[in-house]
Length: 505
Image (cartoon, rainbow, N blue to C red; front, side):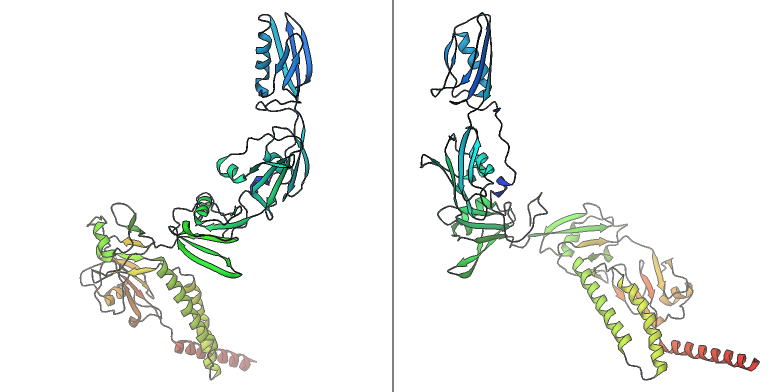
C-alpha cells in the first residue's frame, strides 16, 4: 500500500537517504545585491547623499565598530540594520540634526565577501566565496552537498579558529525548518562528519527512506516518528544482521517503540489484520443503494432481508451471486478442458486411413468450437436458490448480488429450427416448445436438452416442468458416423464422374 498522491512509488528496500534531495539542485550564483533582509556588517559598502538645507555625499564602508561616518552629521551606527531599513535609519539620524528641508538617499552598494572552507564527506570540498548572510546550506550546496553514501546529515561542525563553534543537524531543518542563527565569518570551516548508523523504512509508510542516527542505535519509536506509518499499518518486519548472521523479527506496532534497531536494519510496515467488513454490489430489480458494506461473516440469506425490492417486479426466488474468484476458476477449468480435448483429438493413433480421415475432420470441426469456447468470458455465477429456497453462503468482498426481474417468457435456442422466446403457459413442456420452434436441427437431439433457470440452476431432464424465465438450450451432437458417410458418398460421386469421363473418351 502506498500513500494517497504517490501511487507511482517504487516498492522494495529503501535506497534514498533522508535529506539527500537537499542537494539535487546546482549551486546558485552569488550576487553583490543583498536582499532586503540582509543585516549590515562591518566591511559593507554604503553610499549616502543628503541635499536641501545642506549638501553632503559620502561613499565608504562600515568600520569595524559598525559605524559609517557622514560629513556634517558624524558617525551613524549601521551594523545590525536590515538592508531594507537602511534608508529610514539614515533619514532618522539626519533628522536629529536637520529638522526641515533635508532629503536623504542611501543605498547599500555591496556586501563584504567572505571565504568559507567546506570539507569532510562532501562531493567537492574546497574554499567557497559568499556573503555573511549566506546559510550553512548555501555553502554545502556550493560544495556539491553531503556525500549520501559516506557523509552525515546530522553531524556538521562549524569551526572558527580551530575550535568548534556549533554543530548543525540538518534533520532539524528537514523536519522543523530550524537552522542555527550563527553568522559565518571569513575563514570559517564547515566539516561534514562520517555517516553514522542507518535504518530504513518501507511498506505502508509516508517516508520510505534511510534514516541516520548519530553516535548510537535507533529505537523503534524514532523510526515510527521519521517514517510516519499509514493508518493501515498494524505490524512491522525488522530485517538486518546481528553478529554476522541474518536477523529477522516480527512485531506489532505497539511493540515496535521498545525495539532497538541496528545499523542497516530495514523495517517493513505491513497490514497484517483481516478486514472486518466486505463490500458487495447489488444489481437488478432493487430499491435502495447499490453498494453495501457489511460484516465479513454475514450470510447472504440474512442480508436479503435488508435489501428493499418491488415484490411485483423482482423475482426473489431466482437471486444469484456473481463472484470474481469463481469466474477465474471457470476460465481456468474451461481452458484445461479445451486443452485435454485438443490433445485427445490430435494425438490419438488411428488404426486405418478411413478412421484417421474421420478424426481429422472431426478435430477440425471441434477446433472451431474450442476457439469460440476460449473467447467466452465466464461471469462467475453462484447458484444460491434451488427450488425457491435460499442456500446459506457467506459473502466475500467484491461479490455482486443480482436480483432478476420477473419474466413471462421462455427462451429456446441452440440446435433449433427457429430460436425464439415464447410466452410461458401453464403446462408447457419442452417437447411442445421445441416443436413450436421448428423442431431440432440435424445435429440436435432431445437427449441433449439443457434447461437453465433464471437463478442459474441447470436441469438436464427434458421432462422437468418449465418455469417463467427459463432458457431451453439444445446442445449439438457430434457423431463420427455422419462424417464417414459423407466421405463415402463423395468417393462414389468422384469415381462415377471419373468413369463417365473415361468412357466418353
